Length: 455
Image (cartoon, rainbow, N blue to C red; front, side, top):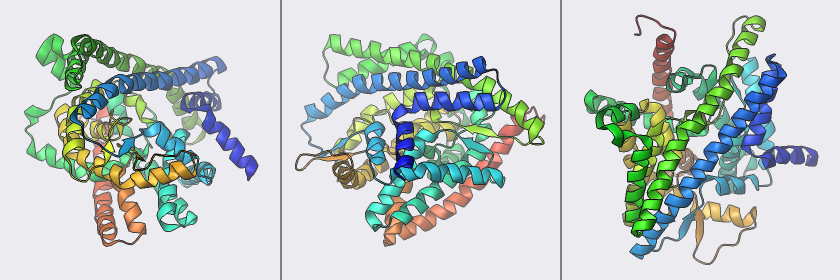
């Protein structure tokens, strides 16, 4: 057992860019790519992941400082500091049962592939940490380790099934064939999908705006670097910065929005040759059965809509944090609200207006869930992370993956009336979601394959 724990801890310590670079290289070799091409593809994927992380961290460091200055200028005290996802999942990995989730997820994936229950080979092993966190939260409130792993295993199954029924949606958005998205954040579609469908019916079709359409309408002001500069200056002004600091923040935001699509192109460079090799390999040896490579969300990071909505809604988030009664969380690490904005991008097919509306609707829920879980994360930090927090201070995670589902699960396993009621609603929404999203994906498949009826 100790040997197993040491092995998987070693994988964790490598970090996502290094670990996935090795994994993609190995997959390329299995699919009979030339060693030099396989190594090149793996390294390119590692560079892409590292590049995205650098730019996101750059944005958080600079925009986050302005946002924190704004909060401090108001004089409002919020007792739970938002860590963001790296420290939060880092604490989850410190749970003494965490290493068991690695072999559990691998076995689940292999069994489902063997029985044709999925076509997704999930290589995004770094996000095993999300299942670890789910298992910990359930165990924390029930004192039942086995129940924590049962719930986490169900999450792993749901992620794979979701990847299967959204693969062509992903290809439509990215242009990359043969990949899928088993990231847990996309399970939030269970609650987002009905909201998106309501917006589809209510909002006029003329309101449909994508970044490219925005550029065409407003000219130079729609360019990434110009929009980034304007938004950065606005954030600096809100933070009470002087002229020099405001202009500097504008340039920093412009740099980030310019770099995101450039870095994201590396995902296409890395994954396309591996996808082609996988397709040829499976056609020859598995009777035409198709497999997809399950990857993390940054394969979509090249689209500007994500970053524009994230930055534009920061003032809204800060206002919510200040005025919502009962909120205790000071947003900081999760200011770039990936786990709400990215699923909205995915389910609205990049509709800027619907993404913005959905974000404004979803932010209060995320703040309240972060407040709800703050004592849990503080306990986890003190028990497994060796972190001591000052009296009256807590640690939180604003923008946690599948915030609403984790809240419902934790309440449901405690058999509270609210938890049971919300769990029942979630089951009904899950049925509605998978039926609808599967039908949508068939349409995307027809369009991508050139079906004249679909066109």
